[in-house]
Image (cartoon, rainbow, N blue to C red):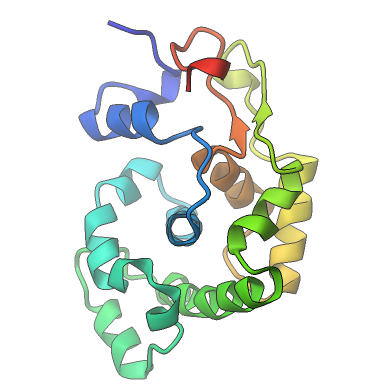
Length: 187
C-alpha cells in the first residue's frame, strides 16, 4: 500500500480525491469555478462534509455552469435553501450566484478564468517540500494576494485560507508531503 498525505486518512472518498485530484494542475474553467464554490461551501466545515455532497452540489447548481447560475432568481435560491443534499447556508448559497457573476466578468476581461487565476503562481505550480502535514501553512502571501484581488472583483467566501485550500485543490501548489507517493513529480 502506498503512503499518502496524513489528511487522506482511510475514507475511500478522501483517498480517491487525494490520489486522483488534489494537487494536480487544473485548467478547465468550469472545474476551476466548481472548486472555488466548493471551497467556499467548506468554510467552517471539514472537506469530507463537502466531498460527500459533491454530486448533490453538481445537481443543485446546474453542474456549476456559471452562465446558468448567474441568472438564478429568488425562487431558485429559496429552493436551494430547502435542498437537503447541500449545506443550506444562505450566505454560502448566495455567494455561489454572486461568484458566478464575478467569474463571468473575469472571463470577459481575461478570456479565460484559468488565465487570470494561474497568474498568481506565474502559470506554474509551486512545488513545496513539506516534511509533514504540520509544516503545511493555512495561508501564504500568494493566497492573501489572490483573496484580496478576488474580493476586489466581487467574489465572496474567498478569504486567504479558502484561497490556499483552493490553490491546493486545483494544483496551483503541490503540497503532497515528502513521504507521500504523490510528492512532486509523481502527480
